[in-house]
Image (cartoon, rainbow, N blue to C red; front, side):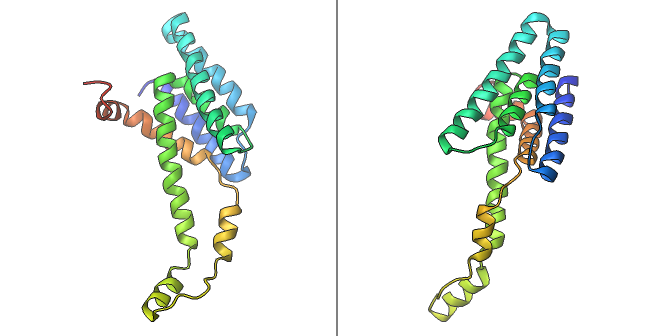
Length: 175
């Protein structure tokens, strides 16, 4: 693992911890992190590295912003965090990070909802041959509650870094 990747993982771990506690990813973390990513790329690869890091920041911000606009969501801390990841890792790896973030968040959201479904009432109703009204208050509350995205971004970043080669091979981008 490179120093840039380690720094990126530290940033997303801090963001995940803050987001779990406050439900916000602060600008005071994301903007300096993006600048650090660009600076580290400049120091290790010169002007081309800085341009590549800035391109990663732009790609990360664009992809997540487009998704949020389509879904009409508010709050852009996750956009700025993934953009900062792009500044550390570059355009290709930030797209892979977003892919793994989506998978991690999907699994988390599915598990969160599955825990609230009244499975026992459904099974008993099916065995009895009739399913009456189900107690769905807990499910409705869960569906309305905000969800911290920082942990899924951190997990997606880690998976993208660790599985970059295997994923690119699977997708046919490298041999």
